[in-house]
Length: 300
Image (cartoon, rainbow, N blue to C red; front, side, top):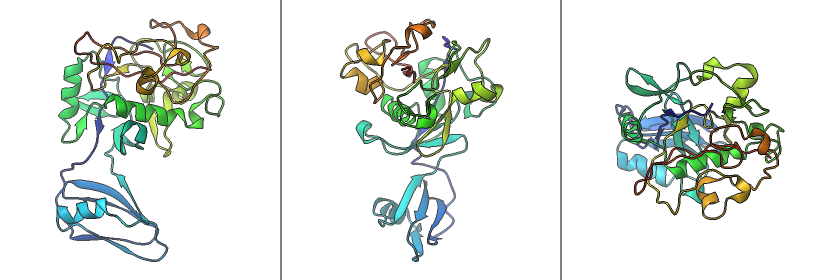
């Protein structure tokens, strides 16, 4: 269901955690993964060496950062994401490293933006208040930038399980509660659905998988999300389908693939003129255009 109401989405680069320092070093055995949260930093450390144990120094932040920035080749590092968040793999095209994003549309839990499945999304919130609520979660939290949103969107676009045919670029990309009944969408009624309020086929259409196997919900349809950033009239793009998106708009707002729009007319029943290609993108008035996210909608 497309809605004029707006849901809050937050991401945390998670470069800062408030944890009490407890250890001077950590041992990571061969083929093991250990979560190390010390000195305001948190990493999942995987030792891929067949026989050599790894010792990670955490006595000072300088030592820990030096390890993070100069890790051995056989070591993998990943950000730690808090409960309710998923790790989004970075994308060099958009200059993003791995970051964490809410798994569910933010809910208003006693005034705190909370990623959880239950209750309806926090909506009817201004762009400025949405960003303030995100930043109030702590250091490193904010609305996602357009580059972060594109990183997430293009990641799920290229996962075969998110397409109705099971093949990237064939059929349609699942979009959830778009106010239209179809192979990849459903028509929710009343208030925006929350994730545990759907079941069966509808539930599957609202859930998208990332390339790392994690799942994220309602990034398209249901209610719209704010993204951080200011765009001028020359870089904004509204509506249309992917066939007609030209540079630089496709790289800024569109998918990585080029798809046919043959089935668009049959699904053009929402107030934005269709569910094809770019989908729906909203923004404020010049000179400060504060956009909501482009919907992830591809029909071939």
